[in-house]
Every structure is written in structure tokens, then in C-alpha cells.
Image (cartoon, rainbow, N blue to C red):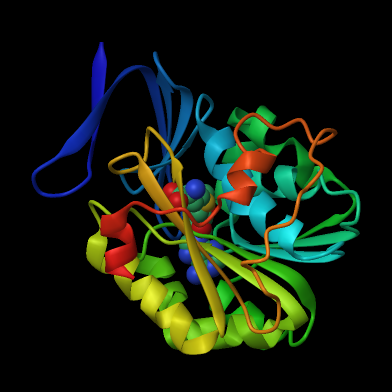
Length: 272
Ligand code: SAM
């Protein structure tokens, strides 16, 4: 039996019992598919867990639906990163969405997701989806005033993702949004990656007038407590109206979570 450990910091990690491991090296990163006993198939990039069959719904629902409900009838959505397809799957649950662009730097992630994670990636072939194999940072420069919602579903702020957590980048995101556009980003663990979390929120606040932070519980991400930051220049993101989610087939997000979206523990409030 094989054991795989992801080191969350120098002092702490999480360990999974694994039946089988497949690894490939792409131009950008080492991609591994692990068959774990507890969490099903797991996608690992450069030693860091990206998604697992058992808990992926939490991350993908929570990165998508709050912003999509806040943007009234969004039609055009951009996902940066997210080559596994899980966020695209959630975005397409909203009937108003006519077009989704996916900007993923590493096409191998998409191939692997299509081959080994069909329950996550199946909507990548939907005719509403257009895939761009490009760095998100460059892509945004070519697309101004275009999107109702931009979702930053990228990996941690190291390597190719580092630039995606900087003020200059969020300015490009703002320029790529329509006037009433909304962006949301995964912003790391407040408890184990405190500096990255605080830094991402601070950089987003430099660019957007309205900024809110919310949390979800994701067992396979560092500490389990995960943050997302939502931002808009012109939409009042704190006006959380009643929403109707009954036809969306969701397992985590619901209208009560939406109503109390920005409820944070005191120590997290104090960090931002
Ligand atoms: N759920 C994940 C997490 O927080 O661990 C993120 C999942 S997704 C697989 C992350 C993707 O972002 C990877 O496939 C990676 O190739 C992509 N990525 C990293 N840097 C990027 C960049 N600069 N532009 C576009 N995609 C990028």
C-alpha cells in the first residue's frame, strides 16, 4: 500500500492511502492522478491536491454560485485556471449563461481531466464552452469590457499562478469585466496560509470598491478552512436577496449559506 502526503507547511501535512498512482510531466508541472481509498480519484499538481472525486463539489459550487447569483442573469463568464472542468460544470447550471470561456495555461490538465475525471470534466465539451490554452494574465489584456463574471480558479500563488494574485492582475480582471461585472477568486486558507490570504484580499481591495470574503469547508485543502474573495466595482455584493436554487442540483451551496455568505469567525475578520 502507498501513502501520499501533501505537506501543507514545513510542520504539517495530510496523508492519504493510495491504491495506484499515474504521473506525467507537462511543460508547466508534474500532474499526478491518485486512486485514494477515502476520497476516490485525486488530481495532484506539483505535489498539491487540486481536487478529489469525493469533495470537489464543495469547492466548485462555492467558487461559482455566489457570484453567479449576485450577477443578475449572467450571460458571459470567464474561468481562469480550472482545467479540471468542475467550475465550468457549475457555471452551466445557470440557464442565463450563453457562453463560457476557459483560460487554462496547461492543456495536459484538460486531457487528464477528460480521461480520468469524467464526472468533473463532462461539460468541457458543451458547445457553450470555448477553451483558450493561454496564460490568464495575457488573455485578459486581449479581452476588455467583455464578461459578466470572472472566476479565478487557479492553483496556489507559486509558479505560473503567482502573478494571478497581484494588484496589476486584478486591475486587468476589472478591465475585462462589464460595468456591472463581478469577480471571485479562491484566496487560500486563512489559518495555514495567512500571509497569502491577507495579501490576496489586500490586493483585491486596492482595485475594487466592493469586496467580500466568504469561507467553505474543504477537507482536502490545507486546514479544511478555505477562503474566497468576491469583488465588484458597481454591484452591491452585500445585498443578498432570496434566491431560488431548486433546479440546480446542488450538494453544498443553498439559500441559507447565500443569506449569511459573509459571516466570518472573529479571527478571520481581524485579518482583513
Ligand atoms: N481547485 C484548485 C485549487 O485551489 O487547488 C484549482 C484547480 S485548477 C486544476 C488550477 C489550474 O490553474 C491548473 O490546471 C493550472 O494549470 C492553472 N493555472 C495556473 N496558473 C495559470 C495561469 N497563469 N493562467 C491560466 N491557468 C493557470
